[in-house]
Image (spheres, rainbow, N blue to C red):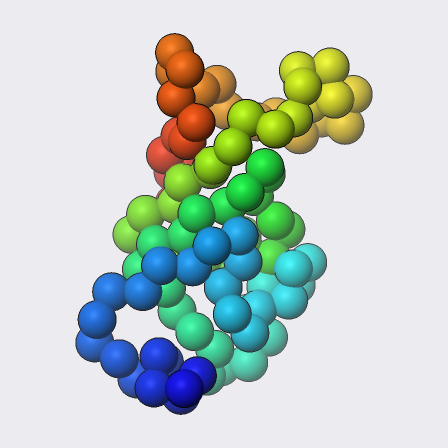
Length: 89
């Protein structure tokens, strides 16, 4: 199934971290999944720095502002009551 996804010509969406990627190191194998879109949850993972797809969204307003500041997460501002925000790729 995994090889079928890698060779697929259909757009692929990954949630939180693409399958086969290391959460901190990112894509560790040349034949890893290359999604067109990534939806990170809570905060982008370190391993997503190498994401080269067209669309990257951050979903969930789960981190209180004081924790964001304390750990210097530098999370983007969510407009209004939106639960996701588009990140620059």
